[in-house]
Image (tube, rainbow, N blue to C red; front, side):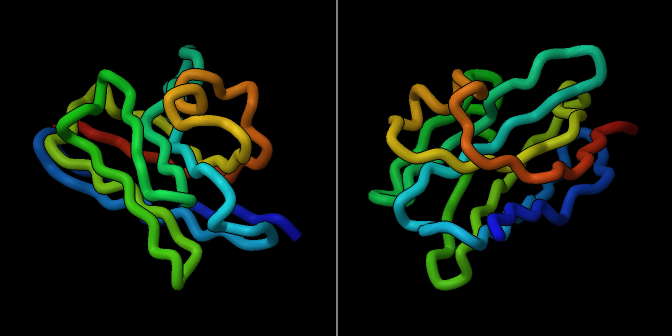
Length: 127
């Protein structure tokens, strides 16, 4: 069974940090790109980041560059999203996602090509 399970969402004040986790199972982890997407109420799903597990290269959406970092722990089949300097506009449900056969620069801007989606975890940034 293919699973992508997000965890460690929560509430934080502006300027704070969170680290999200995405635990993957049921497919060959090292062959896939793992992306993070987010969706706020009434808005389109937006690409946040992507890591190519074949070589650990990464790509970030413009709105999070310099603030967010994504990494993979290959021993645990887990991808992390370290979120620093959080802003209220970062508030959304965050989803991890998996796809193979595409460069991360394409993946982060094209949610329609995703093969597997997680269920999402809520991140709320407010005073």
